Each structure stands twice: as structure tokens, then as C-alpha cells.
Length: 259
Image 1 (cartoon, rainbow, N blue to C red):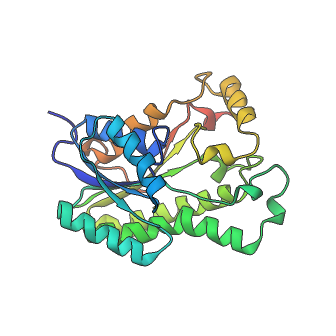
Image 2 (image 1 turned 120 degrees about the vertical axis):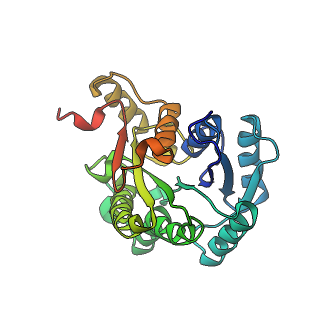
């Protein structure tokens, strides 16, 4: 018997086999869950996602293209999910975007209005938009997970507008938890330590961040993506039935260190 036997859900954000979304999904599947996957539109994006998912042992995965910044795309995606699964038990939101031109040391103050707005829309508002649609597919309650990073709380050089967007994501999580709790839907975020993914590679000075965390984190190392995936299992499972509105740190303890 697996912790997640019989549970079904949708995972946003698998771009390749290094994606945190894939490590979460792989662990969910290992514990008995059935996952559907939403990927960025385009043949190239589908091919990358399919390669990672099928390479991980998932036969004939349910894949649907979705531009999360487009409401019509989100409507089509959740309609397809409802048709495929009828009801779902979880949603994993592991997407974010900011123009990498403005993820460099010293240029946060130069961020244009449109870059700022786009970062908040894709990285934070999409959680609200997805939760609204997912709630209609969760008649028996469920679990929604978003991905964040410590740069939402402290100024990390180079993280810039993405840090602001992640702060908004965490605030959205608390308000969603408050409103959806009466439906039995829990909403939480995982604050993962730095991990090399397609998205994180856009941040200026990432290698220095890895070096610093390894020196200063209580566990004296950087976190592995698989460890984030295991925490995803906890948040989807009934083991976390009383946990909502929380930010769970999976960063080898770095967030507790002052110097």
C-alpha cells in the first residue's frame, strides 16, 4: 500500500528531468499517485516534458499544453483534466518566470513596469488562477502546493524581481488557505534551497549561492531535488492533514542561519 494510492492530480512545470516539478511528480507516483502534466505550448516543450516523464517510467502520460498566463488555456486545461480524471486530489504549481535581463546583480531598481508585472502574473497570480479552477475539481478536498525560495524573505543579490514575485506567491498561499480551507483544500508552499534547473540558471551568481549555502547551511551541503520531491509527498498525503497556509523549508537548514 502506498501513501497516495488512489490519489490523482495535475503537475505544472516539468520542463526536463532536472525540473523540481518532475522530482515531486516522480515521488508522488512512487507512492501510488496518478499524475497528469501541463507543459508550455509547443512541440519542443512537449518533447522535453515527455522525454523526462516517459524516461522516468510513466507509460503513455497524460500531457496537456498550457500557457498559464492565458485564462482560456487554463480553462481548456482544467476541462481536459476533469474529463480525464473526473475529480483530482492535488495540484502542483511549479512555474515561475522573470526576464533574465533583470536577474543580475545591482539592476533591480531598473526593472521596467512590464517586466515586474509579467513576473508577478506568471510566478504568483497563476497560483490563484489555478487554485480557483482546481477547487471546482476537488469535491472531496485536496492539496495544492506552490514552489518558492528564501529570496522571498531576504534580499538575495541577482534574485531581484523574482524575490518580489515569490513573496507575492507566499502571500497568495495564505489567503488561498484561508478561503479554501472550508472546502477541505489545503494550500502550502515548499521553500527549496537553490537547485540547478532551467529557471534557476537565469539568476546571476548562482554558483556563488551554491558555494555559500554549502559553507553555512547546518547540514553543510546543498539540498537535492529528490528531497524536495519527498516533501511534496508529505504535503499531498494525509500525513499533513492538519497543515495549511504554511511554508515548508527544504534547504538543509540554511534559512535558520544568521551569519
